[in-house]
Image (cartoon, rainbow, N blue to C red; front, side, top):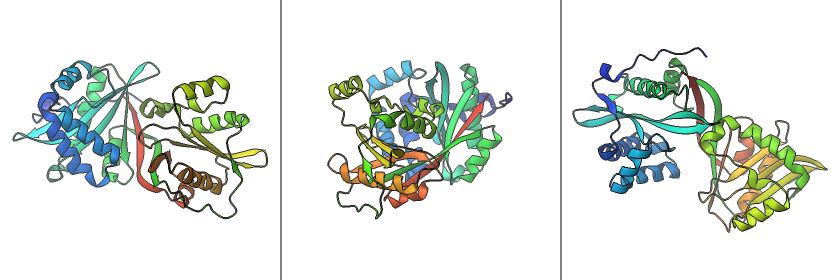
Length: 324
């Protein structure tokens, strides 16, 4: 993509200013909750609780002022303030990708009574410009697929879709029934690993791992990896569906403390029922470990198979990237 010219400057917008961690966090939390409460998941709710709690923690504020440009937390950004009230916000979150700084634009929020006035565009442009000022040319964001106005805005600013992923959730259930004619399932055979790894790399691509921190080392077969898992006291579960000697699909559960630990691996030609069966087995066998399970997966081909296993879509996010 050709380099882009970013016209927005702080001086052009008198209501636009940098986020002040000392005083803005409670107001920003209120604005984000107002704008996104109907679609917010548990992680988002915990995020708002953390913002409000940290705003009263002097030690956190002191640390945040020092670490704003070195930690993957929304400690920097810009707000739009009118008559002493914050009505717009954008966060700029730094990450590292292959030893290069990457910025994620997040929490683009405008009070409902002040929308369609160009505030979201001005905030986003200012965040993009700050990335350039920090010698970063790689900027990402994600937006819900049911927000066409925001998608159109980001496209006009030069963002291009790179991925589309759905967050799925289901409760564990000891009594959920397996489908009739389900494929034979067993614990994964060590010889399945290379195929499973290749499928995982396709479904959980490295160019997104900087944000989600997908790490599948715990799934490798072998004594030393088993020893590491044992020493770390990790209960990693794995299931596999085979047709004869051929792997159809694999599913892994890596505990994270948040329930967001299911990773499905399969090929585009894999039978959907294989994925459905593995997900149901996970719901049954993990009943004693966690009340809910989550799965992050590319949107599209296997949506019906995931739904058939009792999972419900929380949201579908479009990952967009711009080279400045």
